[in-house]
Image (cartoon, rainbow, N blue to C red; front, side, top):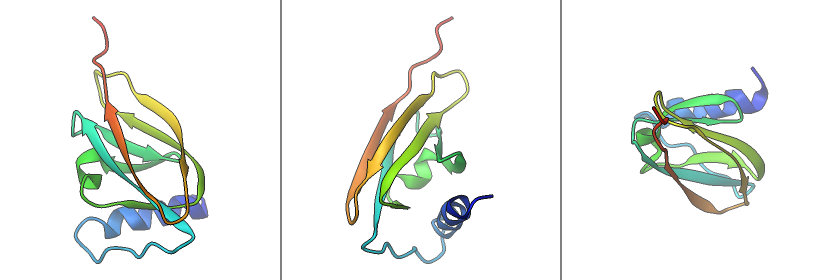
Length: 101
């Protein structure tokens, strides 16, 4: 696992009830609003779990461009690149559409 992947994993684990990680001035952060709420969030190929975990707490990321995927079975995934700016918190809104039958 890459150093970035380990950092994202540590942030994900800390966000599940433990002390919140500090966001340095060199980092930005993302929080999520997803429909459906049980869609899974992946950043830079690291699964961060269900979107609902990140609705009221932020994922701290290094400033720069990151690959974002929000997905759920039976829905079309949202795949995008997101630019994180130092010291800024951005809400990602993802409304997934069902796979056509």
